[in-house]
Image (spheres, rainbow, N blue to C red):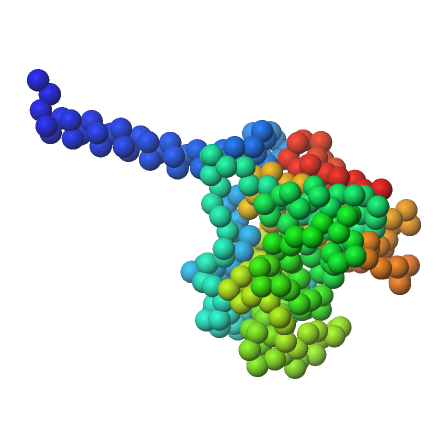
Length: 307
Ligand code: C5P
């Protein structure tokens, strides 16, 4: 006869097994036909590293190596110590943990990442973009007047101080910091007002929901530059970082609005090109576009080329 103690141990083993599989499945799988972060093949496996945290949180340890890479991208003069103190101040004002849902084996979280390319013009992608759970836009992106092509919803808006715009109460502000002053700007733009100078005008105060603020981790920016761009270009574009962010937080990623015009310029769907010599700036536009095409070929993203 099975004793009560044996029954207890058998139950504990079954429960342990269940918990193990739940944890294993939630790390590995999702309910999409193809989960974007599953990495069995070599090319993708070599580049994608789900252990790198895309967003800062209060309890994170920072690496001096990542800081040393980061401080070179816009000639940061401040020390690692100042960086750590500024991040500490940041989390006195904003949520200590980014509002990101865990991957679940029984759910397929979809992301639309919408770059600003002029190829969105007359694309009629709007309804498809609005269908996705998460809709990520960036910099000066506008929807008003362009709804049929770019949709209406924005759950996340990626920006830096010089590209900042006001947001509505339901949109996450995602800051890409390129220097310590950018983190300082975020703190002040939500409190006293920022009156410092930069290479371009910045909003002194911003309208956005303080509880939905997130900040890209400089170590994530370094990872995108090292592992994905293989150090090509000065640093990754906001759009390419937004795309990788989507791959880390979503299970299925739909990509719209990426691609230079026929002269190689990153022209926008919402304005006439002002500077025809701008091309893709400091960013390796061609390399990024090649990677987007390869990701699509390998079924890691769905890429909508536009018109
Ligand atoms: O030009 P802007 O930086 O505002 O655009 C946001 C992102 O959209 C860029 O960082 C780039 O990745 C992408 N983009 C593109 N082709 C364009 C315009 C923008 O791929 N013509």
